[in-house]
Amino acid sequence: TVRPLMASHAAARLSQRLHSFVKENPTKTYEYREWSMKYFQDSPIQQLGIRSPEIRGIIKEWKAHDLEIVDIKLLKEVTLELACKDTWEERIAGLYALRMFGEKQLSVNDIPYFEKLFDDGYMIGWPLTDTIAPIIGKVVQGDEPAIQRICDWNKSSNIWKVRAASVSFVVQGRHIEQHTKNFMKIMLATSLKSLEVNERFVQLGCGWLLRELTTIDEPRIVAFIENNYSLFCREGLRYAIEKLSKEERQRLLRYGKENGIVGKVNVLVAGKVKEKKVPAHKRSRVQ
Image (cartoon, rainbow, N blue to C red; front, side, top):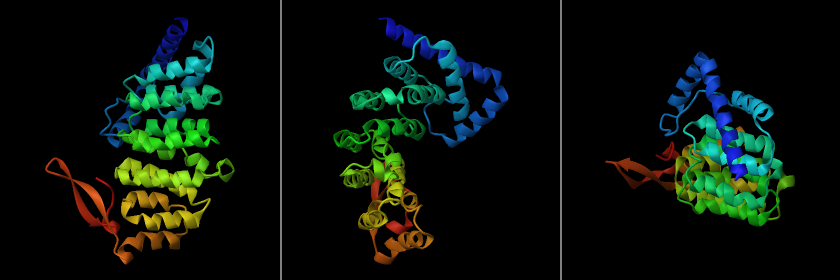
């Protein structure tokens, strides 16, 4: 009974610090909030207008002055409390606090906790998804069954959970010393499943992962792209090939046209989603 009360109080104090920062810096936060609202115009979550470095600075002050104890159970409960809040900054602050002060204490036993954050609808949008993803990747590093469990998130109906199935492994992807025996095989399998989802942010997350994997095994990833070319949206393809040579990027961008590859995209027609066949090289993004 004591710990939940402590967590609730600690979360409330961090929220107060964030809102106080806005009151103390009205011009700065107003300008950034206006920009953010335009950039994230479809977001259902409110914004305070606090930049990430400023949030981290506020968290450090919060830890120094408002926390009586710092342990992983408390931090997880604080993160969960803040995940229910109405603003990006409060939700992200909880994740930052967990990463800054508790990441080393997390284990694969905490996977259900991460799943709850997605399944309960707290992780909405790519900023939250991409903030929690490196924490998840670090937790499951070197544990193939745990890696596979995260990759199986691509079977979810929650697009942000599906995105996390890819972006959780971006950091590991570029470090071959962190790869397990079947890491590349698992990543390509999850990438294929993610591409089939045919949703923009899932595609971009998949492209981001593939981009990092090209630095480890370029021929294998290029072959994967060619074999599954019809599943890529143009934007996702550009992400995937970003770290290749200019000549190879140009070749792959022409690959669909030169080989007559036709893929499917979802288009919005009269308020309903219908499939329309479009040459892969003409698709700018999935609608």
